[in-house]
Image (cartoon, rainbow, N blue to C red; front, side):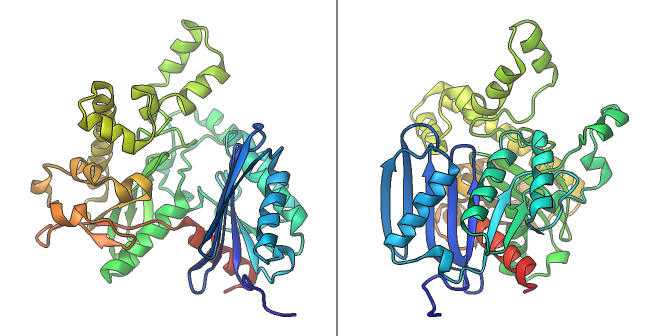
Length: 403
């Protein structure tokens, strides 16, 4: 059979409740061959942005469900001259948000695995059902291609008990699998390893604080290659202030809203996950707009920014104490990689703790890993772009073929 343009590559799939992100890449060369996003699936009017080898196509139209979205994506590949089902695709890597207590390493997907992912959906009701829909839809269309699930929680599976355990009735916690699982693990592991590579140091030599700052945001403390704490907990709500999520709040607020405001659990769930964070504070969850409005003197945007920074600095300080010695502080993801003021302000005034940011280095925009601290800084501060798709593709190949 002739070699097609994506022969030997991996299709990485990240299915959300109404979206489908995908990328085709070669994990050996790191070449990205295709990239795309289907949005507003099942919402009447949908859109697919599809990029293939330098050419972008945008298609508007109704996509009833994820099956329809995947079929439409395959049609776009066909228009590029690629029959994905007969292209020599090596594997499919699926991002799955929650692995619960069952999954803590990349796993070849079969019927038993799909059933277990379905069983633990209550641990991540906003994410795992959509991930499973994506798995089922792609498997139906590409049944002969090995499919591997890569779990967001896997990197944090072995958190120390003191960091993983909530001070809740132990029997209740055990019965309902309540513990701190952590998320964004694929990104935290990739970035922390890339940091060691960038600095020319052994991964097990470095103590790092990694800040994954996007619309969803989390932080981790990694000691000698092992995560010892992270800000997200049983769900992705805990921890930092995010685009639309509260981050840490007093659990009593939930009781107050139910008893006094008469809100249902579903109403509170929507409030905490979709109407809070930066959006709840100033009506805007696009961080660029928040910064622009704050710079223009908008008081609500400035307040949102101040609350966001306060939480960041509190966790940075906590993790410095937990680690004892910090070698590197690393920023990644959309905000972490692109918002220079956040990097500068979150570490401002910490010179006595060995942290000095170089303003000129911090202002540079680049797709490459880079140091933004001064040469005299005792703790190296870096920006390291994350690449979860590459990490998933590599893990999918390793599980499917042992290499």
